[in-house]
Structure formats: structure tokens, C-alpha cells
Image 1 (cartoon, rainbow, N blue to C red):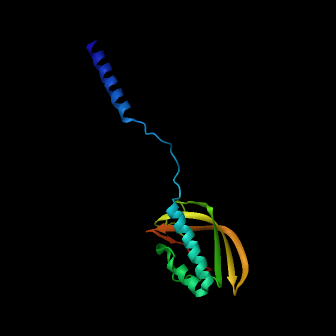
Image 2: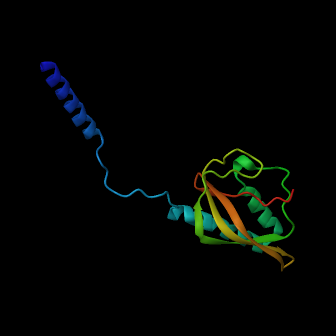
Image 3: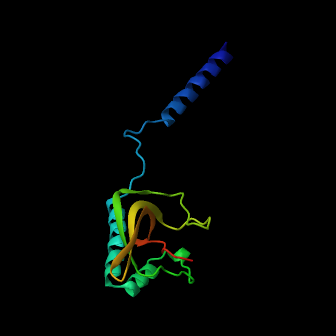
Amino acid sequence: MADVLARAATALACALVLAGCGSATSGVARPLRVTDVERELVSGYFADLNEAGGQGTSEQRDLLKDTQHPDFRDEDCQLPSGTIRVQPTMSTLRLDPAWTPPGTEEHPRGVVLVVAVTLTVVQEGSEIGSQIGSQHVVLLNGKAYGFAPCVN
């Protein structure tokens, strides 16, 4: 009988210890969200890109080279002729942590975001085409980086 009581006491003690380990935390689980700082960095990236395009082809190309993600800089990238104007729809901005650039399995360092954009190609002051798509931007060390629209 003492053996049964000892086992029951041990089981009760274990149950009490385990119950104490599972304390509840108040609050509601929420998915990760884009912060205001991240939103401003992405918005600023597109504003700078459009401003450089308004200054000319060489200025925009220089900016695209400077803001190309450092892990994916391609010396052979041939940018399209003319300039591009990009209008992001910021309400669609979201995290995309599983994305890798086309043609690679390497994930870029940083926080990967994606946003819907309207991209317009301008040559000699005339719009020659528009396309709606998505654009990935990576935030790394407080700076926004993109992936230049290479034609090769």
C-alpha cells in the first residue's frame, strides 16, 4: 500500500511541476508585419529611382548600379535603353522571406520585401510601354537594395 501511495504522490508532484512549466502568455499571435521604417526605405528607393530617371539615363544607371544588392552585382548587366519610371502600390508591400533571385538558389542577405509596381519605359521623353508586375527590394544595414532590370 505504501508503494502505491508513493507512486501516486510522485505522479501528483510531476503533474504539478509540468503544469507550472506551461504558463500562459497574454496577447494574440500576429503575423510579422512591415514596419513604418521599412515602408519608408522602400518608398524612398523608388522615389530616388524616379528622380534619377528624371535627370537622365546615365544618372539612373548609376543609381541602379549603386543600389544593386551587394551579393548579386553582375558586371555584365546591360540595362535597357532609356529610363524607367516605377510607381509602387505601397498598400501591397509585404515580406517575402522565401524569395530568391531568378537563376539562383541563394537567398539575399537582409529583409526581402515585394511590392506591386507599374513600370513605364521612357525613351527620349516619350513613354514607349508600361507593365504591371512585382518588384523585390531587400533592406540590408539600413539601406534599400534592388535588382537591376538587365536585358541580357
